[in-house]
Length: 304
Image 1 (cartoon, rainbow, N blue to C red):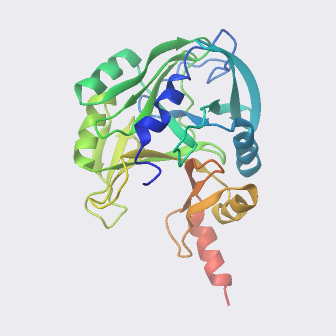
Image 2 (cartoon, rainbow, N blue to C red):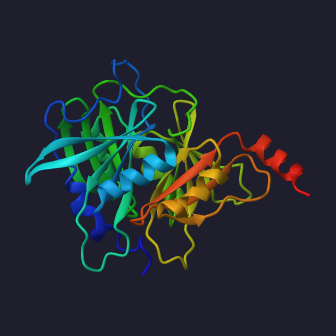
Image 3 (tube, rainbow, N blue to C red):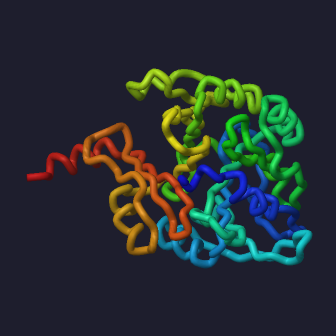
């Protein structure tokens, strides 16, 4: 059975453990606060894993992130939560999810998009055939957040930051830069997210496939929607991408750090270079190099 085929059973309890934070537990998205609001922008990622310390070491070594552990108060008592930052800006967190018998994948990334009203977005999700996994909660310093599964079971977080959203700047290496939704029915998925978060939905003209699409908001492309094969034994899923300075050099370090390469970068020149890797506990994440055209051309010309 593919590691995504048991998505709901494997991670629901871990997602619920993201729960409640005490005041000053979590850093705000912006310090000092700003007034920016960018609905539809991916603003955060949480990693659920049964080996948080090992995961923190992997990502700090691979991506140059820094890690800081804070204490959170949850219904079951105090729990550590690791905040990952890029150049001093918080970008992600790691929370513990106990390993369960039969688990094939012990880690999983969950992305969060900005929305003006988390409660309203959850209501639209359920009206469209989705389900709530973690109800809307007010988190001191952070704002309101929740987690849901869409009509095909793909899991995504919602966040309304109390300190404003990260700006619409060109992502630096180590920043979230793209997301992809793999769905059985891309057109239905596009309608779901249009109704949920006001996304625009249009064909992706960068690919030769007629059934690839783009989700847009605020004049920016936010994510791809890509069809799953009818024969693929996987559930719909979101895949998050981080920008790196050199995707080939980053991928070369993955195995030495205990991870695996799921999709290697191509050797051919392209609009950008990308890869998909898995961390030591099986959580998949994408890597993308935005300045690939010049690098790819130079690399090809240098070959004998």
